[in-house]
Length: 309
Length: 274
Image 1: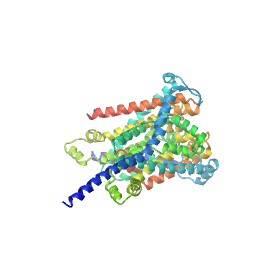
Image 2: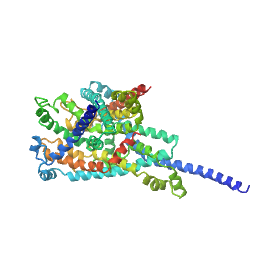
Image 3: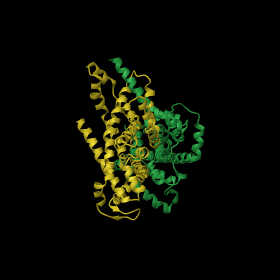
């Protein structure tokens, strides 16, 4: 009896102080997350609203007035914008799948337990990721110059008879951009796939081998389905990255020849800071990327989801 | 059959590794050669490293650009780590329904392309310039402030905090540590590897950032290293040896970070998707 009473008191006290603590903890919690939340609102969400308002305005520099949907209808007859969208989608359709397949393939080869020099291969293929986008773009611009090393090698090996105009031909300039981006990002994606592969139980492959499944069959029935979340993640980040492509195009081809390699980001930059500043229309163009990011991410989720079910 | 497969594997990986490394080899070798040699396709190290360095430092102020980049990258990294880890810790340790909603809203900012923010941010900093000039247009602070908080890093810290042993916090409370004390004295030292990975990701991104500095930095004294490289590369009569040397110098800090902390680097990238 004597011991029961203080015990009750103690638990009551504990409950009370726990409630007090919870209040205190809750406030502390909000303070902890509050700084970051506030900064993200100021530097991401607020500018997004500003851009939305701007996208309905027109005028030079800081003198702006509303003009309804004119900016949006202008998009459909703006040949530079249409060209930029087209180019961006060409990069998306060819570069992202090429890189994903290549990275996946290399990861599967590297995941072989009996492979020698694994560390060397992995580090070497990942190495392009340490370069800045500007630095590697400049290197590629010179490697792919008309009298550059790539043409020199191809001519020397008699693969081609005349130098390819890697930078100044509208078709080849796009190829150069695609090669460059693939060089820079394949190793980056490979790391994600490698870590995913390490989580796959090797006994699954053993069982498949016993059942007589070929390497190709194993790849499509085991590796791809199990890596799907990671493939989806890398496809989305690559897509968002490609939609925002800027550094490479500016530093390799300057968007040329003509506008053959220009991207939406570069067009926004030119509209705002290169030509006489048209912030309103630039904001309209930027909203086109926002809409595309949302639509494409949604489609990728859907496609992956359906294949899953 | 098995033998051809092995041969193919090695052949393919050797080609992939060669293609990946070759541009590095070329830029390092070219940094030691004269421009004429580079255009003639010389692939052997030359004796003109010092000549190229003299030409480089006399034509552009690469050391100032390096210092500017270092200042911006280091301060961005320190601030980003503090802000994002406080938030990631807060969202996970003081978890509540309301906070989870806020967290998900913050994550949406990851979908916003920077090109859409560029113009409003530029105008924002244009206005700030009139009141507080040291964080306005053409200041290092204007580069740091909008880039120091990313939802990605908050997400990264929250994910890592899931592995953090929470008993340590109870023990700390028993010892009479304040809530802030728990964070600084217990959480931070325990999560060293997470901080290392986050630091590498942030430092590299900041060091290599191009578009926003291009918009907001205007005078040559303030330019960062990617701006300087870009200007050199777009010159009319490029001196290949000199430009390649500038690129090698600009890549050294990130290469150093990579080779010293390779383990954390990979852990950091992969941790972000788990």
